[in-house]
Length: 277
Image (cartoon, rainbow, N blue to C red; front, side, top):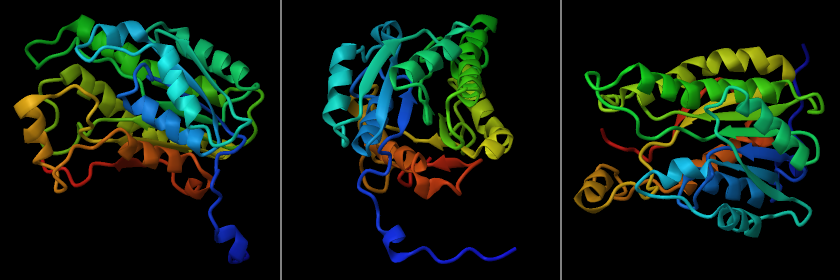
């Protein structure tokens, strides 16, 4: 088999809008303090049109609360790098079995008929506990949102009739396999571990369609869920003395969506800033 030629010099120069003309669905973008919002802004800044999925009732029930969807959308729209790109948003309770496929159809239709990039960022918070606290209902709730819905999103994404060959899928995990695990969040850790485990199988399945599949562990990220002494204690465990910020994993995820990352697939990638457990 002949060797590939070296890239021409002009091919080595970075395009400032490497996602121009691409379309992306980002799930779990209900608030400006979250990773989903940061990812969407990065994709938009790189030239992509973006559909933001949100489930406001979930975040409203959490201590950190939710933003108005129109404020989140406006923030992403302000980051658009391509004046011809678009930003749309819509709700969805991904616990419903039919919701993932419906969301993919809705997002693709809003963005011109296809999705090139899928970032499955959503997850269920709460409804969890240690081994002696969990029950079947908690396990089932996390399975439905954290794992089943992600796999059904990937399935629907891969089945798109109008999507050209090639694409990007990024899932999210939480470092549950690293030292110490997550003994106080058994249901969540179980389902996020399932996504990490299935990454290789999905990447092999979709390789013939030239779709890459990777999973990112963002490590502890400041999304407004810790304050006071607890916040400072976590910050001290980073060599840099600060928490990860939403844009830290967002930069990695946005790069994985570009052509530069076409040779990276089937990987679970830690983006933790050297966090010391």
